[in-house]
Structure formats: C-alpha cells, structure tokens
Length: 191
Image (cartoon, rainbow, N blue to C red):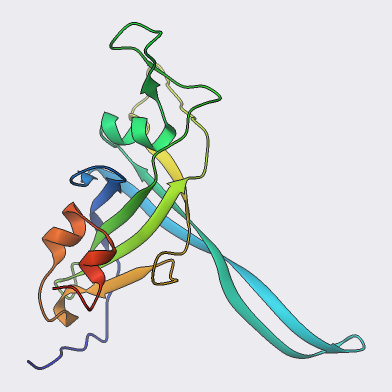
C-alpha cells in the first residue's frame, strides 16, 4: 500500500474530545468544544565559557493541555475527584481535601475543512492539574464552558504527545482512537 504524505493541514475546528479514564471500558466524549491548547515546558542546558554561551540545547520536560468545553457530568466528576461519600446521603457528590481526580488518556479529533482531512491527537498519560473552579452568572448571554487543565506525563513510549493525520494511516483507526484510547491503539506491535 502506498503511503500518503500530507503537506498541508490547517487546524480549523475541534470535532470531538474524548476522556478515557483509568478503569473505564470506553472513553467519554464531548462534541461541544471551545478550545484545546497545549504548552510544553522546556529545560535548557548551556555550555558557557565565562559569560558567553557556546552551546545550547533545549528539550521538553513536561506538558500542560487545557480543554475548554461543555463536558458530561461524568467527565467533570472524575476529572476533579467529586465522588459520593458513604457517610453522606446517596445522590450527593462531594469535593474536599481527599478528592483526587482519576487519571486518563485524552484524545481529540481535529478537522481541516480546507483539505477535507482530519488529525487525531493523543495524550496517553494525563492527570488533573487544577482544583475545582466554576463561575455561574445570572443573566449571562452564554453558559460558561468548563476549563479543564491537565498535566501530561510521559507514557510507556517516553512521549507526551502523539498525532496522526488520518489520510497518512494505513488503516483508519479514528473510531478506536476516540472511543478507547490506550497505548495498545498506537503500538506498532499490536494489531
């Protein structure tokens, strides 16, 4: 099979974002997304002779991803560790010092309307990076989306980030990538 090489991809819109929480059988997705952003923290190592830098190398040491979206209640609760406490009446979910979010894999499907193509993004090892925040405003013209910030740690491949332009894949794995993302989905030794 000939490999397709894509030379242009414009990130036009976010079709879907999915959270695959540890211990879950399938990912939970949202298609009401506002923004997806990522930032990498770099470590710079320099070789100096006196005050003059002779050599410099930078490498990624951590990554933060922020999703701004309207997410299902299940995602909201698992992300922040909002849970039922057996000492409190059923149906009441609580948040406190012992609340710890469930780790997850984060996937996104990005659309390029100009080239009629899609890109898949994957962050296999994520954890909540912020505490519970919310804003509720009476009379607002728009319901506020949640901003979920997560820390991305290296995965079993020693990577933070994976991407695939669907047209370049030998087999379209979009459905599996978005519904049940794990290392097995992208591992070359697994079929």
